Image (cartoon, rainbow, N blue to C red; front, side, top):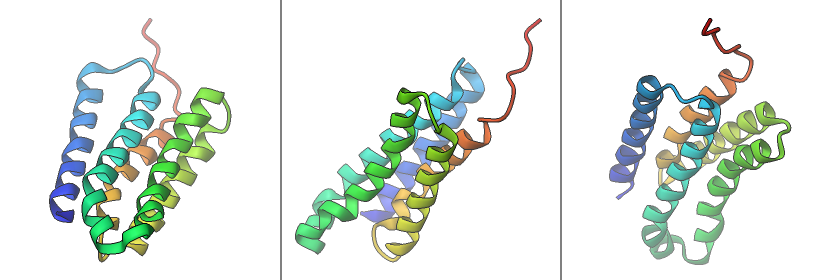
Length: 131
């Protein structure tokens, strides 16, 4: 189950990258943040039955920490402050949590980290002039 979820998350990340390359949205970082949150929520939802069977009540924090971490950049964007810090913090938490749970469900959360790092990397880059 975890392997299939990881493959699905990776395909989702690749599709987001393809959409960004082809469509070139005006606010790419926003698309990356929302996509990372959506992929993380979908991964958590897909792993919920397996995690509840395996870990019982601990499933709440095992799956909740990545979802809360992925929501930080979206909340920072809505507040209009510290988006770079939120992107990097979320990527760090997701990576750490993914490695901590790496032998189990953690690997499935790692593909979303790519989107958050891409969002952080694009923060300082100026938009090319269209004139």
